[in-house]
Amino acid sequence: MRHSTKGYLSMAFSPTQSPVYGGDTLFIRLDPQQLSGVESKYFVVFEGTRRRHVVSARKSPGADGELVALIPGHDLAEEVSVTLVQVTEEEVDKSGEVGVGVCNSYASLAHCYLQYEYDSTFYLTKFLTSSVYNDHALDNLELIKSDRFDLSNEVLSTLDVRLSRALRNANLSTSWHLLGGDSIRDAHCEERETLLHFCARLGLQQVASYLLEQPGNEDALQLTNRHGELPQDVARAYGFLHLAEMLS
Image 1 (cartoon, rainbow, N blue to C red):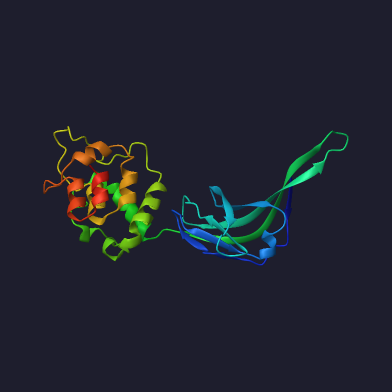
Image 2 (cartoon, helix red, strand yellow; image 1 turned 180 degrees about the vertical axis):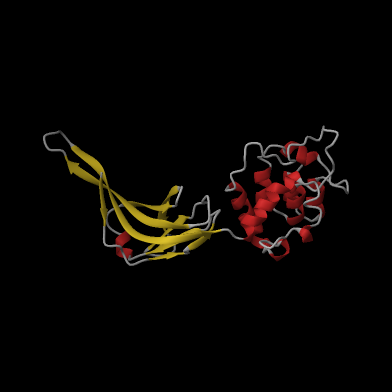
C-alpha cells in the first residue's frame, strides 16, 4: 500500500454546508483529464471531532470532470475536514517470486471544509420525537413551533424527505416507542393525535414508512384520535390514498 499527497488539484466542492442529518449530494469539480486514463476509485473522507465517515464517489454521468458523493449524516453541528482520495490498483513486480502482485496506491487529491448545521428540520424532529410523551402535543398543527422552528413555514414539498433523513439520523434510543410506551390495552391509554396521524395529515409517506418500523407501530395504527379517526382515515380524507393503504 502506498499513499501520497499530491499537489492539491484546482477543484471546487459544492455545497460546503449541510444539515447535520446529511443526505444531499456533494459535487466535486476537477480537470476532466484527471478522470481519464488509469482506472481509479474515489472516496470522500469526512473527519469530525468524534466521527469519521468514508463514502464512495462516482463520476457524474451528466458532466465531464465531475464526481458526486452523498453527504453522510453527522453526530453534531461542527466544521469537518473533507478529503477526496483516489485509490488505484498497481501491479508490483515481486522480485524472486513467480507472478506479479497488486497493491493499492492512495492519493489525497483535494481538501475542503464542510459546515454541519442544526436547521429548523432538525429541531422539528426533536420536537416530534419527544411528542410521544405528551398526549396533546400534536392536537393543533398551527401550534407546532418554537423560536427554532415553525411547521407553518416549512416547505411541504420537501418536508417528507428532510424529516425522514433527520429521523433516521436521530439515533433514537432502543426504548423509544410511538406511544411513549403506552399500549392500547392499557386503561390509561387515551385517544390522541399520534405521529402517524401527523403524517396522514401532511402526506408524509417516507416518514410514515420509517415510523412503521419502530416499536409501538401496531398499536399506533389502531389508536384513534379524539375525533374517532384512525391514521388511515385521516390520510384518506386528505386524499393521500397510497399512504392510507400503508396505514391500513
